[in-house]
Image 1 (cartoon, rainbow, N blue to C red):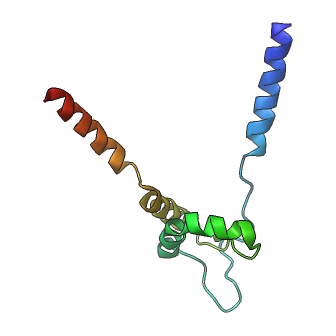
Image 2: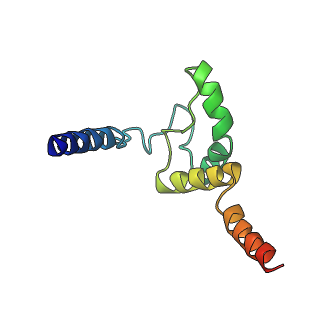
Length: 106
Protein backbone atom coordinates (compact mmCIF):
# COMPACT_ATOMS: atom_id res chain seq x y z
CA UNK A 1 0.00 0.00 0.00
CA UNK A 2 2.94 2.35 0.62
CA UNK A 3 4.16 2.05 -2.99
CA UNK A 4 0.73 2.93 -4.35
CA UNK A 5 0.51 5.92 -2.02
CA UNK A 6 4.02 7.08 -2.99
CA UNK A 7 3.26 6.80 -6.73
CA UNK A 8 -0.05 8.63 -6.30
CA UNK A 9 1.62 11.36 -4.26
CA UNK A 10 4.39 11.72 -6.87
CA UNK A 11 1.80 12.02 -9.67
CA UNK A 12 -0.12 14.68 -7.77
CA UNK A 13 3.11 16.56 -7.11
CA UNK A 14 4.19 16.44 -10.77
CA UNK A 15 0.77 17.59 -12.01
CA UNK A 16 0.68 20.33 -9.35
CA UNK A 17 4.11 21.65 -10.28
CA UNK A 18 3.39 21.46 -14.00
CA UNK A 19 0.24 23.52 -13.54
CA UNK A 20 2.34 26.32 -12.03
CA UNK A 21 4.62 26.61 -15.06
CA UNK A 22 4.32 29.95 -16.84
CA UNK A 23 2.97 30.11 -20.36
CA UNK A 24 4.30 32.12 -23.25
CA UNK A 25 3.59 35.84 -23.41
CA UNK A 26 2.13 36.59 -26.85
CA UNK A 27 1.98 40.33 -26.04
CA UNK A 28 5.73 40.64 -25.38
CA UNK A 29 7.23 43.40 -27.46
CA UNK A 30 3.88 44.71 -28.68
CA UNK A 31 3.20 48.28 -27.68
CA UNK A 32 -0.21 49.45 -26.52
CA UNK A 33 -1.96 52.01 -28.68
CA UNK A 34 -0.03 55.26 -28.64
CA UNK A 35 2.61 53.99 -26.25
CA UNK A 36 5.88 52.14 -25.86
CA UNK A 37 6.63 48.77 -24.34
CA UNK A 38 7.64 48.74 -20.69
CA UNK A 39 11.43 48.60 -20.28
CA UNK A 40 13.95 48.23 -17.47
CA UNK A 41 13.05 51.34 -15.46
CA UNK A 42 9.34 50.65 -15.62
CA UNK A 43 10.12 47.10 -14.49
CA UNK A 44 11.98 48.48 -11.46
CA UNK A 45 9.04 50.74 -10.64
CA UNK A 46 6.46 47.98 -11.12
CA UNK A 47 8.52 45.70 -8.88
CA UNK A 48 8.73 48.35 -6.16
CA UNK A 49 4.98 48.93 -6.13
CA UNK A 50 4.06 45.24 -6.63
CA UNK A 51 2.93 44.65 -3.00
CA UNK A 52 0.55 47.61 -3.23
CA UNK A 53 -0.57 46.65 -6.74
CA UNK A 54 -1.31 43.14 -5.53
CA UNK A 55 -3.67 44.37 -2.82
CA UNK A 56 -5.41 46.73 -5.25
CA UNK A 57 -5.69 43.95 -7.87
CA UNK A 58 -7.70 41.85 -5.42
CA UNK A 59 -10.49 44.44 -5.56
CA UNK A 60 -10.06 45.93 -9.05
CA UNK A 61 -9.86 43.66 -12.11
CA UNK A 62 -8.33 46.45 -14.22
CA UNK A 63 -5.12 46.51 -12.12
CA UNK A 64 -2.29 44.02 -12.76
CA UNK A 65 0.99 43.68 -10.90
CA UNK A 66 3.01 42.78 -14.01
CA UNK A 67 3.02 44.58 -17.37
CA UNK A 68 2.55 41.97 -20.09
CA UNK A 69 3.47 44.43 -22.87
CA UNK A 70 7.13 44.59 -21.92
CA UNK A 71 10.51 44.60 -23.63
CA UNK A 72 11.48 41.16 -22.35
CA UNK A 73 14.47 40.22 -20.24
CA UNK A 74 15.40 43.76 -19.21
CA UNK A 75 11.88 44.39 -17.91
CA UNK A 76 11.99 41.09 -16.02
CA UNK A 77 15.37 41.97 -14.49
CA UNK A 78 14.09 45.40 -13.45
CA UNK A 79 10.93 43.87 -11.98
CA UNK A 80 12.92 41.41 -9.85
CA UNK A 81 15.30 44.18 -8.80
CA UNK A 82 12.35 46.36 -7.78
CA UNK A 83 10.78 43.48 -5.88
CA UNK A 84 13.99 42.90 -3.97
CA UNK A 85 14.12 46.59 -3.07
CA UNK A 86 10.52 46.70 -1.86
CA UNK A 87 10.57 43.35 -0.07
CA UNK A 88 13.94 43.77 1.59
CA UNK A 89 16.32 41.94 -0.79
CA UNK A 90 19.02 39.53 0.42
CA UNK A 91 21.39 42.10 1.95
CA UNK A 92 19.76 42.20 5.38
CA UNK A 93 20.04 38.44 5.80
CA UNK A 94 23.81 38.50 5.32
CA UNK A 95 24.23 41.35 7.77
CA UNK A 96 22.21 39.60 10.47
CA UNK A 97 24.59 36.62 10.32
CA UNK A 98 27.53 38.94 10.99
CA UNK A 99 25.71 40.48 13.96
CA UNK A 100 24.96 37.05 15.42
CA UNK A 101 28.61 36.04 15.21
CA UNK A 102 29.72 39.27 16.86
CA UNK A 103 27.24 38.79 19.70
CA UNK A 104 28.54 35.29 20.39
CA UNK A 105 32.11 36.55 20.57
CA UNK A 106 31.20 39.14 23.26
